[in-house]
Length: 85
Image (tube, rainbow, N blue to C red; front, top):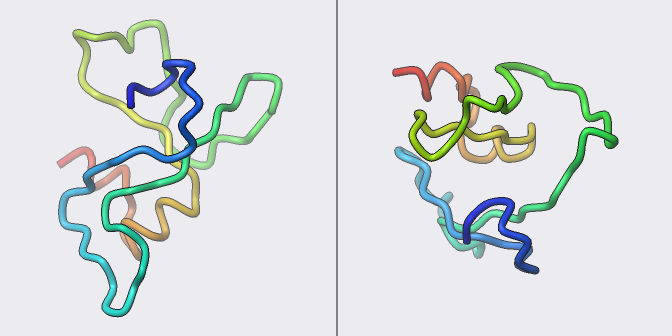
């Protein structure tokens, strides 16, 4: 699924380097729920940066993740530091 493609999917496959599914987990290792937000939602940015007009098909890949996803896939590690390696 392409992000922001206006499809009705609520889950999308992802790959997180280094992530291993916890033993006994019944959740697929590469699926996360997604939802759309807008500037009107006024969700505070905790760390990193927001998307800009410079983020396009030729720029380095970027993503916005919520704290739940960060806690699941980067347990105790700063996901921004991992992405900047």
